[in-house]
Image (cartoon, rainbow, N blue to C red; front, side):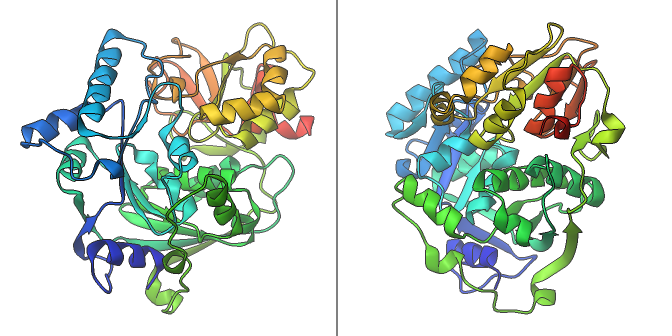
Length: 422
């Protein structure tokens, strides 16, 4: 069986599972963010008194951090009260960062686990060899009650990424290109495994970007086989529960019996990519997007706010000034990343250029606060989606890119090829 099927079989207390089956599985970790007070309300409506296991539940206040409205503040207050009442220790408040970064940093994510969260980009954690997926408020309320959820066992798509990564190319360029080639529905309720020398060579930070954006192709889950980079990370965060024997198991069946389909990509000649408004798969090479004026650049979110992202931006921007007509927002994905980037000097470089530093959080990615857009404004962003109204006004335009392209564009005040600065 494929490692993902081993995970599901173990969680279902079965020897094997097959694609298309409906199974009930036990959850290893359930995470709720501050958008979803409805989880608690539904839990009460279902007659909930005590959660099934407070050690396996986490709350992360990341979408409205700090609270921009009275309603958001009230929701967070109720979540704090619920966590205290239930004895939930894994509560991470507005000072901590984005859930998809905080959970691994806190040692809550491990290869072979089954993780559910109230966020579609939970596919991120496939980079650690976990089966991780987003669910809705009502489903999560049932998980809090029982510790279980049903799934249809997904088919698996294999994507091989080969070649040599060119100058100025980041994981965001690679995954935007793949989405543009395969479309937004190729993996609806399917899992994606990523393999190939490019996947092996890139950093764990970059793998997280590829797994994160996979949901934009409809993916239910993702998987990258854990290697030394994963084990070293888990060692650094002093992880206490690692199931190496399960997550590294070799495939016991032929590929054509395991995978529904296989796609091969050679990215040796890939240019930096930009997703034009208003679809994630509306992707062109930088040469076709260059010159479009921008009013704001965002480097941050669960897709572009890690150390490697901020380091790359600082290297491009060092010694330069952001023009007065442009706003550059830098939002680290977590407080730990912020501290490290301060220690390494990256934050000072960006502040000296004229950048604005915001609280580690989701920021304006969901159009709630910390940098929303006005009608007629253009923003180049390292975030995950560019739908109308995603970052504020429905009359604003969002261009998705890598941190390198966003940084270069901030300097020029227009979409710019980062290779000019490298």
